[in-house]
Image 1: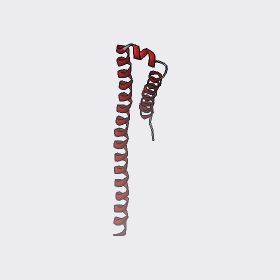
Image 2: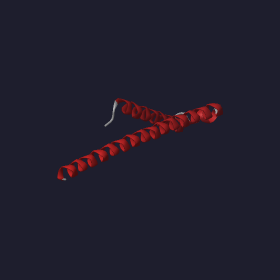
Image 3: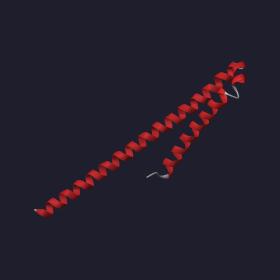
Image 4: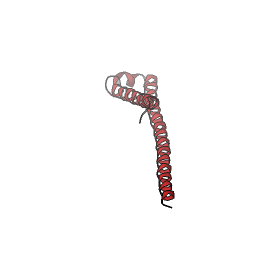
Length: 94
């Protein structure tokens, strides 16, 4: 189940990837002529697009690690609960 922190983290990841995709689209279409004639702006523009993409990637990897850690702890709790019930049933039989 997602909590508000998870939702916010995913929203930020989506925001950064959409912003990078928007910059990519604009850089390849509307701003292509301008960027071709201004090399410094070209480099800064594409580096900013790269940084936004890397930020979204880092947020996604962090989210993956958080979810894996949570899933592992939930599986461990379920495993312990199941075996404690088995042990209780064995004790009742004896």
